[in-house]
Structure formats: structure tokens, C-alpha cells
Image (cartoon, rainbow, N blue to C red; front, side, top):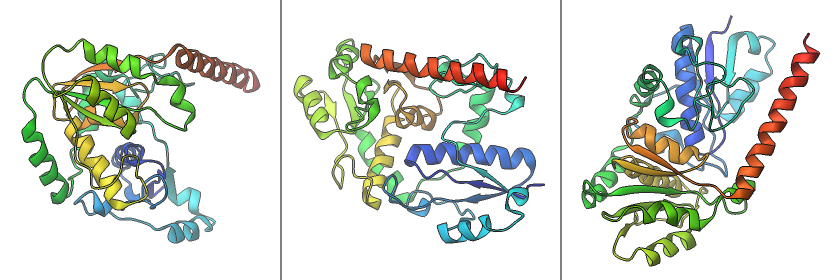
Length: 295
């Protein structure tokens, strides 16, 4: 019988937060103690304590390795390292619910935004609201968001440069979404300094961007991740949110805004849609043969 749940995502900032939230849900449901494994690495070179005020039991890489060598590890510890926002049986999410990202189970809620049942949203927000950002971060957010007004629109642009998902991105699709907004300012967050400058040039006097301490895309320093967290919380402040498809960073801005923002997804390219369709076919084939093998 498991006594502990270990939240063990080693990915980027938002994937870690999602993993932690899901692990907290599991731990409470099963009346288990929670342990956090939050290593600093090239994806997130920042400690949990550099971002949040919360006191939480943590475990180091060396301590985890020692535990995993014990014969009773699998009986004592439940290791959760999934980036998805976990759904529980009591959530009542149907197996064919997901539309944004196909999966074998089909009951995932990732990137579904307002389609997510209200009761599920409220339950996840309960755990998310437990996380208290560091005073340094909240002060930065409060100071900068004074530039916002009721007509400010948040834009989260993920180009995924040098990644496989880069085929999803085309700056022209970003412009299509932004061109629809005739009034108001844009608060723009991007993973590319070049793209941010292009957007500023196209919409002069309308674009707001956070003055980062370090350069865009810097995940290798504490300051880089803190900058990204400040930007995430700022994206969460506005009533409208334009998001990149399949971006957990974009989606977590919506969650941190208590799921209140009106969301519009930036369209993906034809190559991107084709790539996603192929991936879905692969998953369906694996699911089909898995059923046959288990008959």
C-alpha cells in the first residue's frame, strides 16, 4: 500500500506545476503524504522555493535514487511524473471527451479550456490557489499590471524554435488573431525576441512587454525562470487571452487567471494540422493493437 505520492516532473515550469497539482489531488484522494521532486536542470534551472512561498517536503536526486533502490519502493511510493492535468474517476470526464489533443484514454482535459466541466475546474483551482508566489514575484506583477486596462489583451506566442512543434507556428496566424482587435493594447509574451520585435513593429504603440532581467528563452538561470513566471501571472490578468495551440505555458496563464479569460487559440499551419493528424492516427493504431493483444 502506497504511503507517499512523489510529484516528479523534470520538464519545464508549467509542466512541473501541472504535475504537482495532479499529485496533490492524488495524495488527498488516497490520504497519502506528498513529496516533491523538483530538480534544477536545463528545462527549469530554478528551485521551487525561488518561485513559491509554500513549505513542502522535498527530495533530492540522490535521495530519490536511494529510495528507488529499496525493495519496497513500488509498494511505499507512488511516483507521478505526467505533465497532463490528471482526471479522477469522480470527475466524470467521458473517455471520448478530449478534442484538442487525442489520447488513448480520451478523458484528458488538457487544452480544452471552457469545455472542461465547471466542477473539475473548481477542484483543480483549489489546489492551484494553494500555491503562493514569492513576494518578489507578486510585487513585480502588481507593479507592471498597472499598465493594463479593461481593453488590454493577453497574447501568448509559442514558436517552439528548434523544436519539432515549430511546424505548428506561422507569424501570419498570430497577426490574423490580433488584427481582429481594433482597440486596446496587447500584452505580448513570446519565446522569441525576434518575433516579439516583429509584433511590436506591426502594432506600434499598442504592444506592452515585460522588461525581463535576462534574455528570452533563458531557462538556465533562476532569474530566467522567475521572469517567465512573472510573465505567466501577467498574462493571467486580462479578460481576453490569445493562446498558442498545445502550449502548457499558455494554458496555465488561463488557469492562474481562475479560468475567467475568454480564450482564442491561434491557428496552426496546414503542416501542423497534418502532423497532429498523423500523430492521432499513430495513437489510434497503438490503441487498436493493444486491445487485440489483451483479448
